[in-house]
Length: 116
Image (cartoon, rainbow, N blue to C red; front, side, top):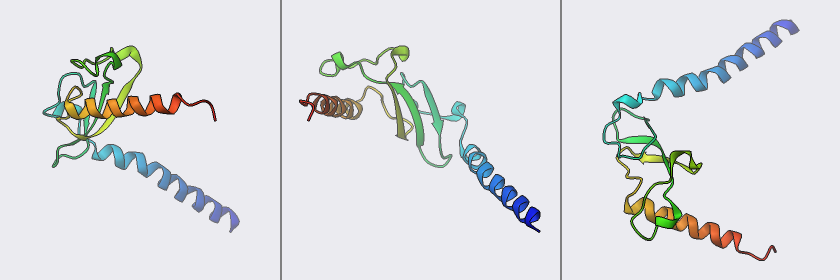
């Protein structure tokens, strides 16, 4: 009887753990069907067919160009932004520039402390 209980417990655990990734993959829309993606986006995954909601990955804006005409870092520079929102989000738009300026200021303020 103990063996049957233990076997059923392992079977239930395997089903619960295995179902999550399968269900998540089934809901994703192939990137080829994503429309409206702006230049500079490395990867775009539509998360819902009915709405304009995507997971976008793009290089961060070069910190030296945040105050001037913004330009993206090289894709291999290492700073990649994971963005969840509208599929037509512009990686060089005013909203993204403001967000990255705020992040840059936050990083400077956090790192400029005297170590206390």
